[in-house]
Image (cartoon, rainbow, N blue to C red; front, side, top):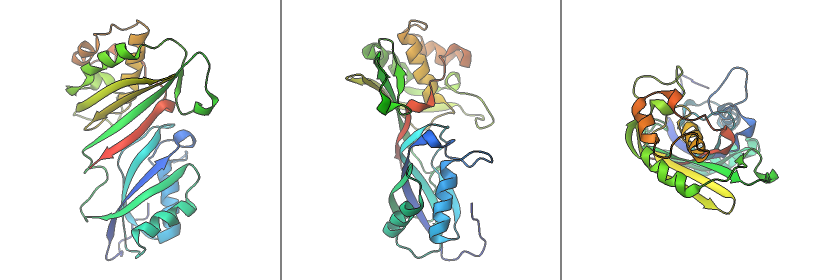
Length: 254
C-alpha cells in the first residue's frame, strides 16, 4: 500500500467492487499469492499515483466471490469519483470490476463503519454437474431437503456465541458473539441458495454453517441439534467446512 506522509487535501472515497474469487487467494495482501487487494492497489496506483489508508470491508478466503465488496481509500488526486471508477476498470483484470465510487466523510472506514453483511452460498443439487457453475457453486449430488434445512437454520438466528462455527486462528480473538438477523434456504429448480445476514461473521463461519446443514441433510446431525451445538461452544460438534466455491459476499450494509 502507498502510505505517503506529504499527501495534502485528502479526499476519502468509498469504492464498490465485484470479483470472481477463483483466481485469487482472498482479499488481503499475501507475500506469495495473488490477492484482490494486490491487483486493486496496482490499478489504483496506475491511475492516481500516491494514496493512503486503503481499507477493505472484510476478509474473504481463497476462492470466495464478491457481488458487493467495499473499499475506502484516501487520496489527493483531483479526479472526479465517476471518472476514477472508469479509469480503474481500464487497469483491473477481467475478474475484478469497480461498479461505484463516491466521496464520503473523512472519518468513514470501510470495515469499522460496516453495520452488517449478507452472504449467499450456492449449491447445484443434481446428479449431473453443471459446467457453467464449476467454481461458482458446490455440486451436491445427494437429494437435498431445502424445507428441512430452512427450518433447522432458524436456530442460527439471534445473538449467540458462534465459536462452534468458527475456525480458530490468530485472526479470531476474544469476542465470538454475533447477531444473525436472518437465514434462509431456498430452491429454484436444481439451484439451492442459502442466505445469511448478520452484524458480522467469524472466520469460516458461513462455510461451517453450510457444512453443518449439509450433514443434517445426510442424517449425520439431528435437525434440531444446532441450538445445542451453539451452546456446546465446541468446533468439533459442528459439521465440516463447506468448500469456498459456492460462497459470495452479497451485500454490505452501512
